[in-house]
Image (tube, rainbow, N blue to C red; front, side, top):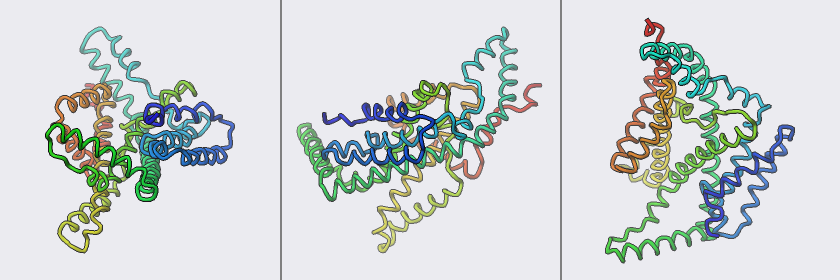
Length: 346
């Protein structure tokens, strides 16, 4: 019962708007009804209420799915724009494998990438901004709601504080029994709460996007590209937010008068670094996708390497962060969209 509104069954709540929404519904009434139903989760008992509104909770998933399904509506102009004709990798692979000799397959591969180059460029130009805005808006909205409820449950009702205290006591007993030093993780958890909630919210929204694409294909009989990391990018002007947060963080370390702002500068810097790391992942995903390479297998391989050799995770994060930052000045996305040129076919 404690995990009733946890992540697995939260996905079931996300299915409710998908199967209830009809194209002839009034969107304004539908959206207000989604807000009202989401508000009803506030009347749950303490622990269940906290779980429902934390990232990946039932209330958050229901709210995002209820808004997202409007964009998934096949009669909307946005949905039609998102369904630009683009052959699947399996179809392209089948066409290449029709050629018997290896050299002919290479030429066919180069020819297909040249033909698809304009489609890739239009797809990125039209869809990357909308896709990125969709992910960022849902992430920011769910982060604000989760942080507000968490702060209320911690400072006012004390439910979240009680949950953390119980978790700490259990962890301290295990560390004491194992003869290990006991560190109070609650202090760091509170210091980095906005960053943790933002990262968790983005991960939950991204997972929900994959989940919704699967069921939207069943529900609407069409494919959508919402939530693809290859279409994720952030505005170039956001680099100034990174610079301000970085300068403020360094200043708070050295100037006594700025120390009260350390909490905001530190979490702002961590959030911006996370976003630029995601932008680097998006550039890498686009690079492999345009070249008809199995990006999902590459991502799975990176995850397995991270599980087997956790010490490489910071290195991979730094590499993606560097790619995301270099995108601001070197326009790596445009370079990734030019896999081959016409001269390569000669």
